[in-house]
Amino acid sequence: MTRCLTALCLILGLPAFAGGEIWVTNEKDDTISVIDIDSLEVTRTIPTGERPRGITFSHDYSRVYICASDSDTVQVMDPETGEILHDLPSGEDPEQFVLHPDDRHLWIANEDDAVTTVVDTESRTVIAQINVGIEPEGMAVNEAGSIVITTSETTNMAHWIDTATHEIIANTLVDSRPRHAEFVKDDTELWVSSEIGGTVTVFGTESQEERAKITFEIQGVHPDRIQPVGFEFTPDGKTAFVALGPANHVAVVNAETYEVEEYILTGRRVWHMAFSPDHAQLFTTNGVSGDVTVIDVASRKPLKSIKVGRFPWGAAMRPGAS
Image: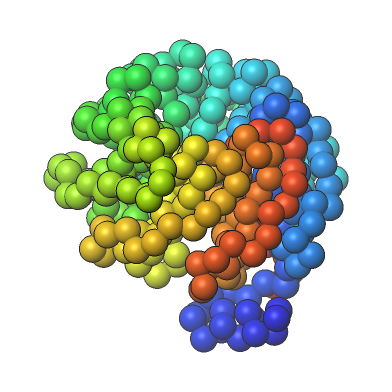
């Protein structure tokens, strides 16, 4: 199987990796579950600060950053040893963050403070705090590193921030309780999920105007339970997988037509996702059932459920040896 996936990576022009890991934050257990991609088993459980949520790796995967929300800090961990190297001054209640393309600056949503904090990870200092809407959560940065997005759950806005001046250059309304945001298609589009609104809004980044709105309908599931949160795109940008929260499904969306193609059953309250290094598998965090669903991307079928800690929240991929 590994040889077949490696060959597929070479055909598609993607880097080929042997194995790898999916790191999952468990917000009720104050731990990280590390899943081995080859065995599809949890191989390590690592203690963290209180209520870990957002998680991301440095560009060379030598450090992992963790939003320890109730500890009011971002922890920096050595992924080899699981040792906390130091804490960063993140601001109060960090929930999600995004690492700038410079691999140095973390942009952090501080939910309780209604600010976005910019932290220099090398000097370990706060270099800016930007007032945004109430309950900021989602964070995104474009490939150029010139614009950062913060979504505010209660204000129902996406805030467009100039990374050079640290000033808001635009505010765009979205549906109720925006959660996750991503720039796609060479920075020409911004996608924002709205949990209570039940939609994903697509903006043109040049005009900052709405281009499309994606809605969801699952037979036998009440519309109030369809709550889009995290989403991920295939490397070619043609397909998006959208986690639908307590609907317990992931939607497969054609990113060119904005039409939903099908739905994939997962565990309870699917929240965020991460691809394996070869993008052959998608791992979803299911908060209420306390597990991770492994989805085969080609067949769009669930392969396995992996038990992790209580209320798994965030997910990030760490590749194996190339």
